[in-house]
Amino acid sequence: MDEFEFFLEKAWSDGLPVVTPTEQRIQHMLAATRRDPGELVGNVPPAMEPATVRDVAIHALMAGCKPEYLPVVLGGLALMLREEFNLNGVQGTMHGVAPLMIVNGPYARKIGLHGGNGCFGPGFRANASIGRAIRLMLLNLGGGIPGVGSA
Image (cartoon, rainbow, N blue to C red):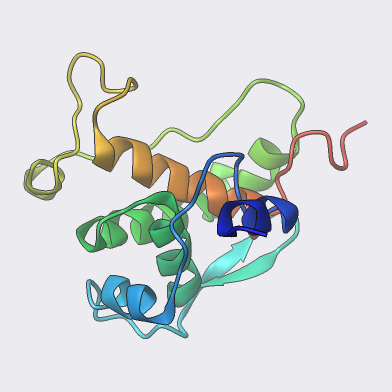
């Protein structure tokens, strides 16, 4: 079985190929933060699986993020885990909702986040891979799988 089929069989993918998270790649990704890899970012609803800095790095890697995107992914997840965001409601509803993260400022420009025309379209790696990393964590750690647990 090839790697892509393995990830699909384990339900660790969103249906698209992922970058295999080897230990060397994980360490390279973690070098982009000073945070402890074992630090708990939070528990992702509705499954409430813990998300450590290392877990976030693995999902960012799988999604195709560059190491310099990791601080944005870490910050985005931390914000979504705040009570007022109601990630459990976002994950559990049958309505058409999805998280939207807006990043602005010098760091956004530095890493190539695009906020102009076509920002939701193809061609912007930072936009696509950061969003995908969030989605993979919501699937894999939060159990937010469409049709599973829905009425």
